Length: 98
Image (cartoon, rainbow, N blue to C red; front, side, top):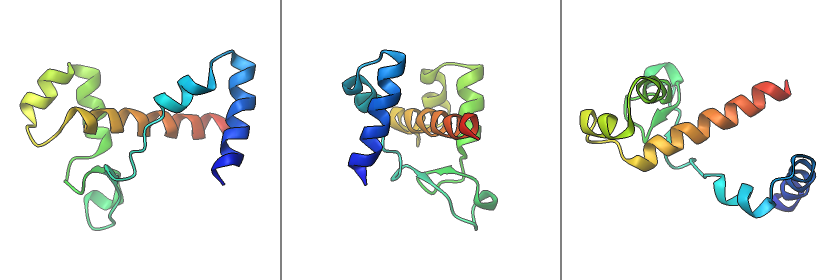
């Protein structure tokens, strides 16, 4: 399955002139960080099962800086914030394809 995804990625990357190695390094596996549980925040994507949603983090990122977020929410990590950004980017890509 992964080889099929890479073949598609190679075709798209070739069209925009970006190296495949760069794209593979940029992609983040956030599956262990972003969780969705129907019993928490109505099933919205959350950080590591906490009651903090991806949308909450994105709003804070848009309004301030990473250090301020980590200071205000000491239970979040820089990797949590990166996972939220990667999740949002993937959602945007899916939206643009539709």
